[in-house]
Structure formats: C-alpha cells, structure tokens
Image (cartoon, one colour):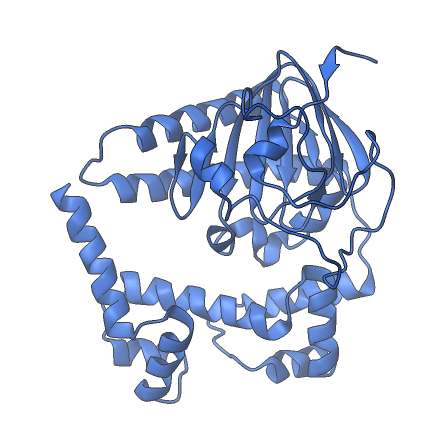
Length: 342
C-alpha cells in the first residue's frame, strides 16, 4: 500500500450514510442509478444529525467543518454508501486519502480540493492517520442561488462528476484557506449588528472566487457537449435573458424549436430537474430578490414580473414560499430588526 492507512470511515461518519449490504473493501465499478424500489436507507449529508453534531458552525445555508478525526464514536466500521445532497468542498491540509466516488477511486493529497455535487455517491474511503482537512458544505437551497448553477456555468455539475478532485496551485490553496479562516472567524464570534449582511457578502465573494478557480480547470479539460447538453445550455441562456419573466415552458420550447415534452425530458436527463422546475427556480429567485430589495410596491413588482394580476402573484408566492408577499417582506424586515438589536 502506498501509505499507512486504517480502514475507518471518518468522512462517512461525519456526512451520514445509507446501508447497502456488505461491499468489498475496494469499490467496484457499478451503475449509480440507485433503484428507489430497493429497500435502501438514504440519508444525505445536509439533513443529517451527524453534520449538526460535528460542524464547527451550521445554519440554513452553510456548515463549516475542520476535523474528521475521532468521529467514529467507537466504531471500527461504518456503512458502505453515502449519497451527497449538498455542495461539499473538502480541502486537504495534511496526509492522504483514498475515496471511491461513483465507482471510481481518487487519491487526495495536500492542497487538493474535493468537490462533490448532489447525487454523487461515496463508498468506503480510507485516510492516513495524519489526515487533516478543512471543509465547507453549502445547503441545497443556497446552491440554487449560486452562479455556478446558472446559465453561463451550467456544465459545472457534469464537469465535477468527472473531475471531483482538483489540485490547487499555491495561490488558489492560500485563497481557500483565507476564506475558510474568515468564514470561521465571522461565524463563531459573538453576533454583530450587520452579521447577516457581512456573511452574505463574504459568501458571495467566496463563490465567485471559487467559480473563477473552476474556470481554470474547465479550460484544462475541454468538454465535448452532446446535442441534449447544447439544447439545455440554450434553454438556460433563454431563461436568463435580461428582462425575461415568462413562466411557460411552451414559450421556451417554441423558441428552441422543440416540443415542451421533449425540452422537459432533456432537462431531466441533463440536470435531474424538469423544465418547469428550472423556470420556477428562476422566477422565484427574481421574486425573492424584488421583495427583499426593491422599493416598489407589491403590485408594482407583480406587474414588472409579468404576473397577470396581484391576486395571481399572491397565490404564486403563497404556494412556493409558504406565505403571502406582504408576510414575506415582514419576515425579512423582522430578521433585519433582530440583527440590529443583536
């Protein structure tokens, strides 16, 4: 063996697990289209008590982790399968690790960054005794607002699935450590007046820098796109056209010269989500932004976003956000007041 290892699953313990029988020590190639009809217990890393217990910090958007040593809770072996449901970033500070992801084995060394997107699957992993890491987990909901998952970078998911381990240069590694240290310091200190605003700005800076880092790896590993992927990219380009507020899948299908059914099938194949779901995410992002930051009245916002009337807008917001537009604004105002008092 290339380095001293012990067969322990610190990483799996931290991120939760689902059991799938007994597997060999070294993972074997298999299809990872998990059959939902099988009697398999699936627990993602985000909605899991293990992450809650072991994170240095966790809120509804981010979890910060700094150590996976000693998390076995006395167990020599843990389960064999973990399905990721969030965006997971693990930076190797020291030591080595061997990870089996979607049937392929990857080695991680110092200054390597492990990037995992939702629906990838871990099997048994091995780490050296001196392994040290720093990690960030971004929630499924927060990911929807990340530029990495918008039109200009729609291939992020497929790229990372093929290249989950990125070897950072010294400058990139230093930048990741700086962001981690700053996030850690800001989130673990006593609350301040503008805590939320500072954190929002810092997270936005982090994910844009992360995006720029990813672009270097894109350029080094050019990808040939299938016809389905090209159609999907063109759909997202239309969806993100400035001034576009259309909520009908048929509108985009017509622009792309395909049927709504075919467009939705392609979106499901490429992204795991239907065209309707993607349109709704885009519309809701605009709705939430306008309700939070626009000085316009709710009626004016409804008109700007091309809703037929105020009543329809109210029902739409109620359906997808759980509260009326007015209540949503009041909640945001209440949160800001609480931050100010703190």
